[in-house]
Amino acid sequence: MSVQQPVASDHQLARLLQIGVVLEEVVEARAAKHANVADLDDGVRAFLREAAAESATHRERLDELVGTLEAETIPFDDVKTLVEQQYEADQDFDGVLYDQLCNEETAYKFYDDLIGAVEQSEAEFGVDRDRLLTVLREIRADEEAGVEAVTELMEERE
Image (tube, rainbow, N blue to C red; front, side):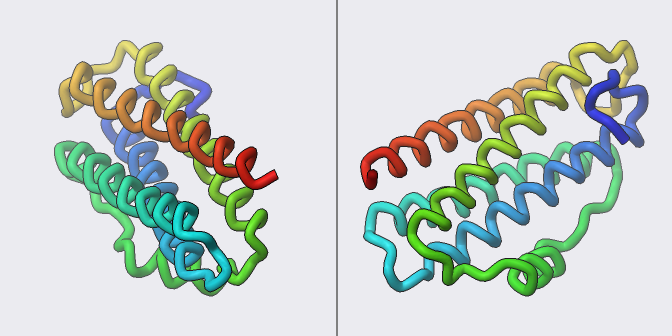
């Protein structure tokens, strides 16, 4: 399934939105885990906690859209456990920020591509197109702001 082509059906849209849900689950779990690293300063810790909360909000908004399409999502606890097993949060300070930057950039690119695929589509969806695009654009803007915020944090610490 690709976001390089126009979205052709509710089924395809639901699957792409579910990819967004999983992406947000991964970002949320990793940011929350990184926020507990002992040697982080309070500013970075607060940023990571805010990023985790923002991802949870994004996930809920995407879940709502998927619900309109009557599709199931992957439970957050299942993904969180897998993420915790795969990634260690005891990285050095720069590693935590670099990881968060990669997460924010990946999410931004995904939403940017998904918006393009929806805009190119002529399909009728079970969710209002304007509502769908508004939600996706707001989430993309949050991810863009996240990229900028992480970049600023990294520059402050150089």
